[in-house]
Amino acid sequence: MALSLSKEKIRFLLLEGVHPDADKHLRAAGYTNIQRIDQAVEAGALAEQIGDVHFLGIRSRTQLTQATLAMAHKLTGIGCFCIGTDQVDLAAASRLGVPVFNAPYANTRSVAELVLAEIIMLMRGIPEKNASAHQGRWLKTAHRSHEVRGKSLGIVGYGHIGTQLGILAEGLGMQVHYHDIVSKLPLGNAQPHPSLEDLLRQSDVVSLHVPDTPETEHLIDRDKLLQMRPGAHLVNASRGRVVDLDALRSALVEGHLASAAIDVFPSEPTSTNDVFESPLRGLSNVLLTPHIGGSTQEAQENIARDVTEKLIRYSDNGSTMGAVNFPEVALPDHAGTQRIMHIHRNEPGVLQAINTAITDQSINIAAQYLQTQGETGYVVMDVETQDAAGLLKALEAIPATIKTRRLF
Image (cartoon, helix red, strand yellow):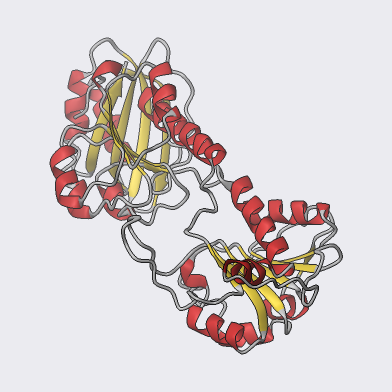
């Protein structure tokens, strides 16, 4: 049973150098018990530190396994101050009644800008010319150097980043085409293509913007690479497993593709001290960047604001919009009532048991909200009573209960 705590007693632990704007937003909302650690914490050490943490903020390096989460006895919510949530065992968090929030769109502009810059550099042959200059060679030539104006850009995955890239590319005069497994209306003059193969065949540049799923693993393999135009360019700033890098190396070395820019990799170093390994190392026609698509100050500020606001809303009034592993409920304020939140296993009869407990306590319900997702159910009740202790005990006794929480 989690009773309502005063805000200064609610403990936030922020790891991995989360942008300091997170502290600013938390303090503005009245939360002052904030601890910072500017690097990732190894699982064993983290398990020892999070026993009394209510809200945990991480980025991409901290791994929250089932065993680690089991040690966080007071954990109420997790904020992933990044785009992905692969570093968290989401199912384990759900079983513990802990919603996980992220910022899926906060770095959209930053990624789109990097990709557009890479497209220009690839089509001008900058990687090879830059490498030659560093080696003392003066490679001043217009051979295989082109303007992007009038060229065809094929976007695979027409989501938030793909659509914004298309708009920016049109501004430079590119002809934008896109393929997505979901039918989507085009922005600007972009042209949809139901066939990925057709898109690959007619694009001067192909840019990938798809999620990491079993279906997208090696989506671009040797066969797909050979379907691309001879002399075309490939950009991947989506997920590392989407491209078969050995096949890409062959296509580049053999001259079928002119160049590539890769920002994401199947296996990435966990710290700046680790050696980066890739079959693409050493190729002068390849731009390699260390997963920095969203690594701008503006993106990090947006992420800090987005994730922190989600944590504050959940702590203040129980709203879970934006949670990736939890039923999403948007809640109004609850002035004049006590708000009871009941997290439970999604089983038949739970709502009836909750309402029976309330009736037995002779408590009036001013409002009630229910949402489920997978194996988790979430009921929020605004009740008109000055003493909900008995009700909380009754709710805790319901067999399917995972966690209860009360807000005044």
